[in-house]
Image (cartoon, rainbow over all chains, first blue to last red; front, top):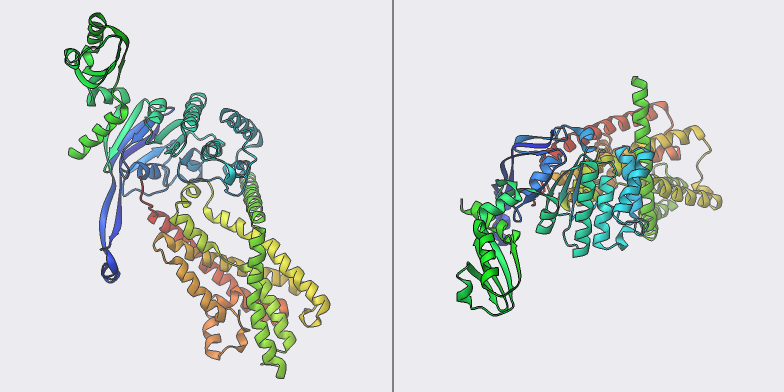
Length: 328
Length: 276
């Protein structure tokens, strides 16, 4: 498959004015402004094959959104180059812009005072979508996102979840090849988050769109992307399969038990590290490669009502990965 | 081939503008009460100026301006001002500061086109309202009637459109300074203050001190208001006056267009909202 996104040594450095607090500081900054260079993104390289979905993870201020803004042509890089949907984002012009969409979870493009249908109409004209394509795409998006009831209501009367669904529909009417999503489920309730995830998965399968998303919700990541890019302090720390990251960072499995007859903490410790003990429930951590054997022994030796083997929570894995970057 | 491609481009633009103006007009309709207040505010200033000059001219014409001439002049100011208003600097300032520029920059149309469409959608109908008020007033008040000269009116329309374009580009380019500074709108306020005198808003230019008139004629201010008002009300009469006025408008339009293009190109590279 050809690459839909290639970033090669992307860097972005900002000059930020330094100002001491208080009136004296403000006056000093006025008389002799001082600037500090902030390296928001440093030498970031990766490529994403056409049709793949990749999640960009990192704490606040790590450089995720800055990278997305560079790849969408919004920000000019201080160094490096990129190709997105076969175009250079900074010189590709309108031909490039017709091939991508950028959805920001905290900013909307929907016309606030008018129903979403009006934004759809406007985007049809702006992106030059033919009437026939518009009719079929609109109908598909309205069905997949269950927008039937809401497209005619003024946007300002819609809930956050309804607005995000309409926002996605408006961004996809021109059927972009590459979809950039910055926190698409930010602030949504669990049901709305799930709807958005299901929709994005279905849409990608149907249309082969490439997706690069950032999210703080691990459920978004595990549902949509098998590959993750981890960035912290502007540097790319990890690029690979989510499962491989989990195996590398946390080479353990968790065995969650419910016992039908009590067993002491020390008895359980014979099988692994007791991470949680609240009879009749307990959680044991065991090396990944011995998880199956340990489970079999537990089932044979103890009165077990229920047993499940799980990976450690992904949030914890990611937190450890961020920490590694900070220390290294 | 080339003509087919040009026809397609024109068709695309027409469609984009039609939709942009339609949505802008629908948004304006949501704010109709505010628009009435802005309209009243817009005519308040020329009415106050007229009131002052009316009483001054009660004792006789001031430098050739009778009471009736002042009335026609300030009705003209109200109409041309409405057709050439500029608020874009505040919009752009907000777009840039609050991140609303982001999605505009990822669409296959430059943000200025949205602003142009927004201007047309607002100014065309509201200027018609001012014109209707003028027509109704003229039915009862002979002083504000202007001579029936369709040729002059056609030239006045051209002058008003050029004035609107100069004032728009001036406001838009100044607003784009928000790429560098948070004080862009303060510059617009300063510009407004100067334009009160130099564009003929509070008095016909010929009544200002000769020094001010001298400075004004080398700047863009008179071409944004005074010239179209004088064409409309009949103060511009000779071919030389017309030629000088339109040439001034075209030169300043080209200058402000160049400034806009320069600021836009530089500002785009400068744009860098930190986040994420």
